[in-house]
Image (tube, rainbow, N blue to C red; front, top):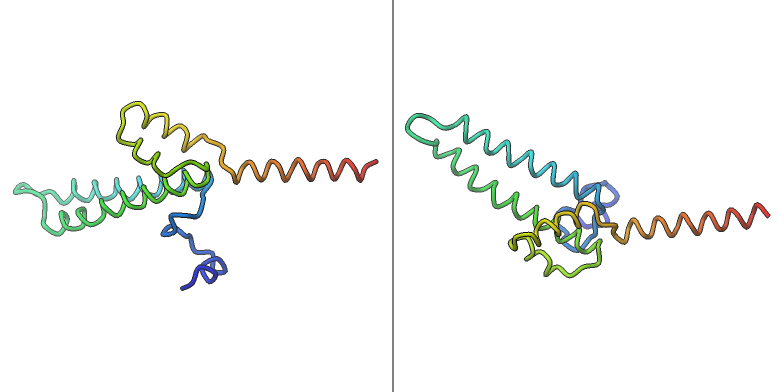
Length: 133
């Protein structure tokens, strides 16, 4: 399915690392990933027998964990695009204290999509004021 067809159908573009996402989309994507990760952990907890973890549960968790991490990195990359920052900042996730700054920036930083909306609304307000005169 092409990207134009995805836009018409309304499918998310989670595989596109270049399209920016705003704060709300980033938060929702992280909530979804945490839900999947905790579900996997719950399956491991429930699937653990007295002799150990069932091989099928281990295999499922072994597949899902890298996928969740990959989608997490894609979300960070897309959010950094929205903030107009270099993707090298993704390496900041492994540096103590820098990762806290990066986390706050990703969740609270005002991206270009928010700035463009505010500039459009100020331009619209200026146009409306001109029409009132």
